[in-house]
Figure (cartoon, helix red, strand yellow):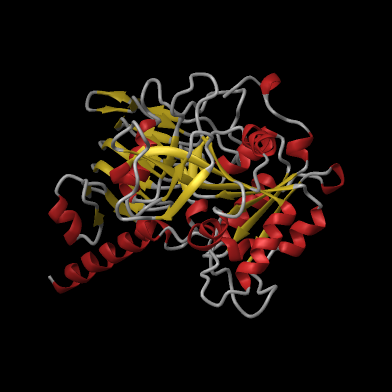
Amino acid sequence: MPEQSNRFISNLTRDTYALILAGGKGSRLYELTEWRAKPATYFGGKFRIIDFPLSNCVNSGVRRVGVATQYKSHSLIRHINRAWGHFKKEMGESIEILPASQRYGDKWYEGTADAVFQNIDIIKHELPKYVMILSGDHIYKMDYGLMIAQHVESGADMTVCCIEVPTEEAAGAFGVMTVDENNKVQRFDEKPAQPSEVPGKPGTTLASMGNYVFNTEFLFEQLKLDNQKESSSGDFGHDIIPSIIESHNVYAYPFIDPETGGQPYWRDVGTLDSFWEANMELVHPKPQLNMYDNTWPIWTYQEQSPPAKFVFDEKGRTGCAIGSTTAAGVIVSGSTVRNSLLFTQVRVNSFCEINEAVILPGATIGRNCKVLKAIIDRSVHIPEGLDIGVDHEQDKANGFRVTGKGVVLVTREMIDAYNAKNAKNANNA
């Protein structure tokens, strides 16, 4: 990211209200989001996914933010209150939680546009010139001020932030844009089976990131018109954008690295495999996502925990972590951790082998365990002697989820069922 002195913090960002859509279920994460919304999912050793768009807002100078929540939002609301509840309304800044509350009619949020429509009165009270709509599901660092500046300079009614992705990856997953030489959007297809390619770049598609900038009055006008259409699904991609392309100025804002002009880091961790892969990238010697960048910090709630500790240095019982990331409060006791990411308060007991594992806060690994290429959910207690990721057929028999790429997910419910089954078998023996 650019140095702080070069950030586009101006009246443009101060006149912008950001609404983060954070009600996503994250169904392709399966049991990992059974009790939490996708934006509340843990990432990177100490963060939650929602911390990235919120940090981008604060670092960009956009300090009036609403977070629209819906699906199983308790952990998300608790985290926002703890990590982001210190903003002062009297200082012109606030991060407010906007749960679905049937403000207009008897329905909950039914689409991305409907979620904004149901909060029009709250946004109007802030008197912004511009409204920025953000997805709460993605991992990236971005100066929103640059996008807002282009929106104003281009005379756009709406600006769509976009990124180049492989065409195969975009199929059925992203909104796809076709633009002219001035980045004016000519066509928008929501999750097409056969996405159009970027001219001159075969195999590459211009995909929407789900981030938009609107002139406020124009946004309100379009949301009210859309709400009157019985056939509308209340979604920006399906309904709003296609309906305004021909009659209004809709521009694309290409998300590029301002220093290199290349493709910046951006991850949609919407599947178990992509979630595991994105976390594994962080243990590389020089990961693309720089978590140690003091000029663009990622803010979050900091638990009061002691430093990580590695104990015992005996033959066959040495506590160490190699090529790994360990958060505060971690204890590795007489075990070897390799190429793994351990969150806060994780405990690994003696004689274990941990490799390519993402272990979420408060999990405990019992003695004599092997955990290979796995995701261990929060507060899971792996019983002594249990191997995970060594034999996938056995993993499935134990009730664990195994992905197509061989990542094993273990949750508390799975372990409870495993323990109950073993106890029953022992009683019947």
